[in-house]
Length: 449
Ligand SMILES: *Cc1c(COP(=O)(O)O)cnc(C)c1O
Ligand SMILES: [Zn+2]
Image (tube, rainbow, N blue to C red; front, side, top):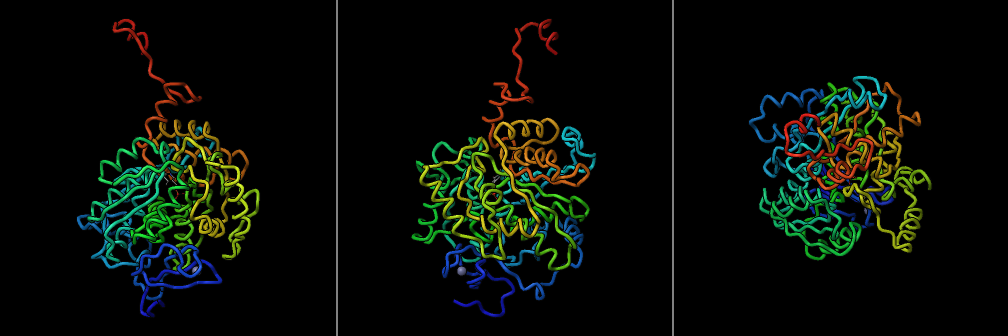
């Protein structure tokens, strides 16, 4: 079905040899013609929007209006794919960009140069809410009745919350034993129908796509291009926190690569419409136990290549994983993914932002997490991969000590209490801070202060 010419937003296949277009009123998730990823595209000349970024912040004065209060929909002209009447909001995006000089000094960075973007402050405790508000707005626009996702945890928590907020059924597919406790508890508490599959995230991802295609269920994984539109606003809020100045670096953990993809798109579009005049560099950080992007980008030279990504390199890599029976493993369960669905879009983001990719060990993630907790608001393990990665980038001279760096802390510290307790109680690293046990005696207690 061709797109009617009057639309200001449409879905478009990212494959340059296809470029098929579809109206936003359809729920597709993959190009029906070639199977590649879909993008949301806009006719910017026909979308009335503020001429300065700071005008978006003026909406704070009307924060009694839910769409102006939302840290996503405050920027609605920059993701203008559905009418206001369909928008589903729970007050997401009230997040904080913290200047953290104490952590900066521990890392040897100049004061005023390191910033932490706390996306764990969202309603369900992770950045996923930025995407869910957009996906469920689209789900309501197309009249969906039920939704589903495969999840390492936070997607299921966020989906369950937004699904019941707008009256949709929702089913969560999780790998057995692969989900942090805080996240599983949320999915159940928010009323998600939870199905544990004996397998890992990649197995769940395959099954949920088959289930949604066969049963006509609305899929809210980051394969869903509307989710990524909502996640663009994380970068708008980072710019807002910096007085609308563009930082030198954005550092983000890489799992399914939806966030990194969305960030690249956000900056390319802001530059296209003249709201910024340069883009930051991007660093995507994997865990060494789930390092597909690092392997493909650094070792096998895979690049965006104007959309002509060398699929044979990807296929050969995945065939090898299959033959070895490889299953990803990291304490950072949110990025324990070996077949990232947004790989190609992430390559595009790396191209737009002159990006770099690296992988960090679990011990490095846990130490960084404890440092973030001891100097800032804390985060879950996957989020700490950013600071662990930054240490390498500083040591290698990729990031300069006077450059302005923003690390995106994707999830709340209470998401995964088990990892935190084990690290501290069992003295697993240099920053462990275990409780001391003393007899019930005043003198002895005072001696331990
Ligand atoms: C989902 C998630 C990630 C991974 O993000 P992608 O967009 O899939 O790369 C990282 N950290 C947390 C806390 C998450 O929930
Ligand atoms: Zn296509």
